[in-house]
Length: 286
Image (cartoon, rainbow, N blue to C red; front, top):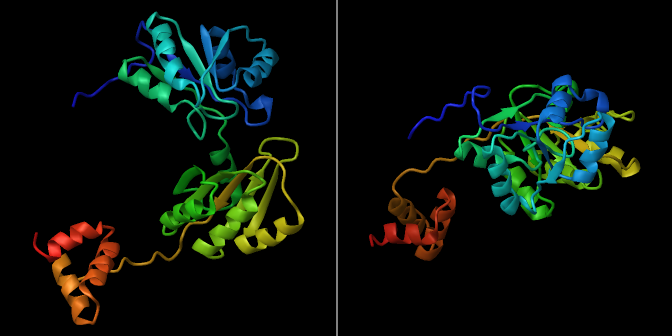
């Protein structure tokens, strides 16, 4: 493998700038972010109509092209050709940091493969902003983003996170946050939780309590505005159960206890996250 070295400001080809945009308060736009938007040759936006409002506010006249989850396959080659011609692009999402639960990652990877410099500007991001004011442990933290909407899929994701000792950061719709909390209680138990809504806006609000207390509160006080949901990490991590012997020996032990071979094979496969066929072959020495 050859190490790729990027000298961010020492190349003649165009540069991709990743520009964070305000998550609510326009005053969070940095001087550098505004200057970058004013001086690049093109702005790649998640939603050009939404971004145009921001550009109008800061008197930015640079043209836009859309880049989102539905068009990135056909758009990226066009943007790469633009960058290779020596022109620069600023990529923005509707709010916050590109690539963090927003479009952006595919273009970054494509640029790196083509040795086009990628420069990230610091700025607004909801998860970190909510974390440091939440009162929960700020580090380590585990940013997850959006959970699956389907209950069974969401519970599987939460089960995978159950023993995570870091503070967990999720993004959630105000219409789904109550049901998500119920799933969290079912999988994690009654942990400390913080909900932050309308971050950086006039009606910014932090709700702090246990998961059960917040479910009770939300039953009478439905929320509005996008939510950041923070959950305290696990304090007691369950020890993994260990099993002695080879797969064949484990099956034989279960058979001696009275299980049929077929059922014992299924049990051992489940223990180790294996396919039944793998354990079957080991048991029968195939």
